[in-house]
Image 1 (cartoon, rainbow, N blue to C red):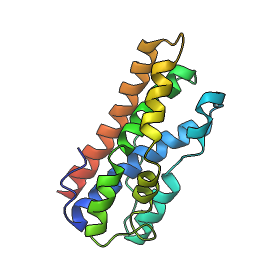
Image 2: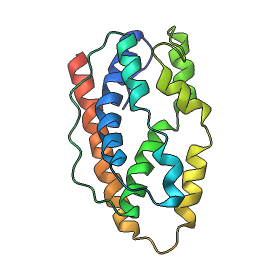
Image 3: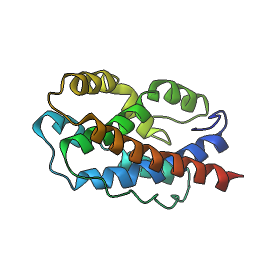
Image 4: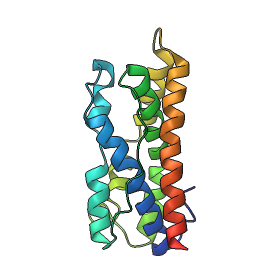
Length: 163
């Protein structure tokens, strides 16, 4: 879904898609009250780094994809975080690819570098999700699907704009 990621052009398409997806979802989460066991994720927004990467490469941000109304319950936040953390899972590989394109932790690939250095986030999140007591898993899945739809829409738009 992120594209070939094998040229500066494909990286820019990826970055536009990532900004249109991640920034509005993070903005929605920023306005929430975080349960204590999820607090670590409340401090891990990458939107500002994505904006800086866009500026480095002189790329206008794509229009943010509207985020559907997703509730503020713990299950809703878990579903949204499932997609955000999943999207960051491949950051180490993507960061290496970005470096081959001449991008760095201080130019053009800040968000990937920051995600790559926090490589235990996915395993910590899965442990939290799997050990959660009495959650409505259908609600987690619903929020996850809604968030994934935002990501899919953002990357499809970016891909079509690049054509």
